[in-house]
Length: 439
Image (cartoon, rainbow, N blue to C red; front, side, top):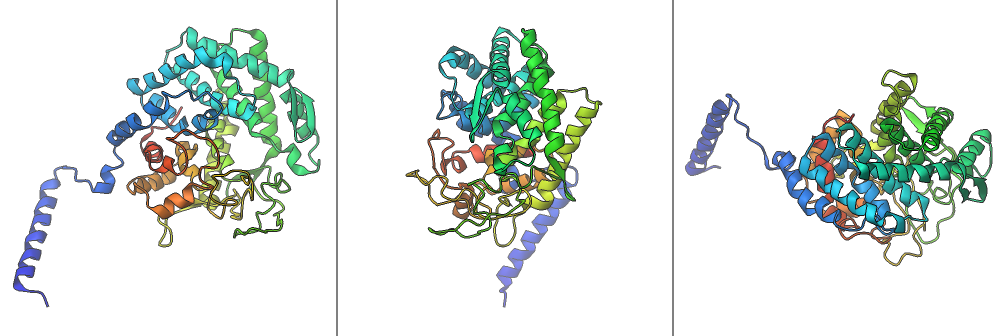
């Protein structure tokens, strides 16, 4: 039973709440602690602690280029889409420093190099759009254009025992051999997607100094359209890219299992879709391809439709909202909703990997490390808004999001699990909430 004193206290509290409500009808803005954490001002604090410090490092080096090309993409788009001069200048200084080092830092791993350069091609698109073009940007564009021209037509390419002269020959071979086995050998590889997207960015800019280079870029763009039209399969919810193409690859051979152990036998899933970690790049790749064409063209309309339907597939099939069992955002490991083990013993030689493979939902950290914050979907933006108020994350969330942990070399700010405590994960979450629609 309540005492007289407790009753009096309750009445006073209720009176104050009512009075505050009346006074605030005129427009005062009262925010909870969680709401205050999603304000743009918080981005400024985290930016100084993360992006500024990260960009001081030689991120073009092979230990860092792959991660930086991915993790900095939301930051780059936020800086330029908001027109924040200080943040844009942070990237300007970085790329000026990169020019001095570029000749000595061409990675022999094409994927790492192209992922790093895709961040740069997006930077160049923004620089051109904002009228901030100079000889440094021209140098970078011409340098990468020549690399792409040579890679597309002339450079020997050897992957999975398939030997071609030039990337184009390999891409065309895949289109002409749809029934080749093992199936994974004709899957579209990330280096091909990145070549498509960078070429699209450079065609949009239209400043190539070399006619042969420009012709190569346009040829890449034309081929990319043929690839997407041949490999996309529409579903009731959206679409999948080459479903089943990877099912016989070692990364996917154990996808039928949902629990790890030391002695799993292969349990492949025929028809399984692409993993949700690699798929995170599609929203930005597709926007690059869309923007290489006139806005009302058939090509732009097609890529725009793919972008919209990708979001539908993701939200309807892949994404799992927080619930009473788990307080964080999650996604299934594969884009068709399959959620089995991915890359069993992939990092077996690593001395720092914390487990033998990715368990169900274990790729969910890509929601923070990847391009998903740039999907431009109102539902997903609201999901991020609710999550941003939960930083710092509790241990169960970090344990899931870090995947296999520090399985390879990485910069201290983005190594696992430090990425989730350094401020970078929170920053990318806030960017997802506050970034304007992209162009």
